[in-house]
Amino acid sequence: MSFTYEWSIRNKRITIGGIVTHVDWSCTATDSAGDKYTLTGTTIFDVMAVLNNQPEPLTGTRPEFIPLEELTDEQVIAWMQDIHSEESRAAALEGLITAHMYGDPDDETYPPVRDYTHA
Picture 1 (cartoon, rainbow, N blue to C red):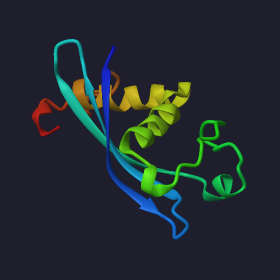
Picture 2: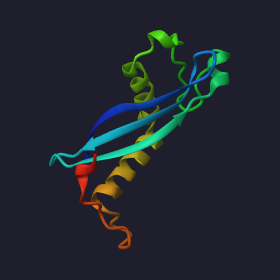
Picture 3: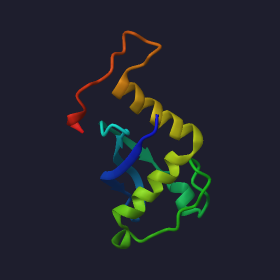
């Protein structure tokens, strides 16, 4: 199954020093038929990695520190896309969305969700 994804930031939690510690996000997946499903979640960042100028453990990358007053949602979305493009996380994201939209073919007790309009 192939999806296109649209990410949005619902909330950012910030430390006193202006470091983003948590990002509440939503990711809307659209399939080739135009059906949509929105998954929401929270990603927690390693503040010590930022303070020590080390790679972020989830991706091994080190996003450039951006002062909070200059930080845009587009930059934070790029962080989310970087984290969720890692192979196992991308497969997990697609698996969750697929199960919610179409049901789990291996589990008859998990029927598909057919109300995509809540996204």
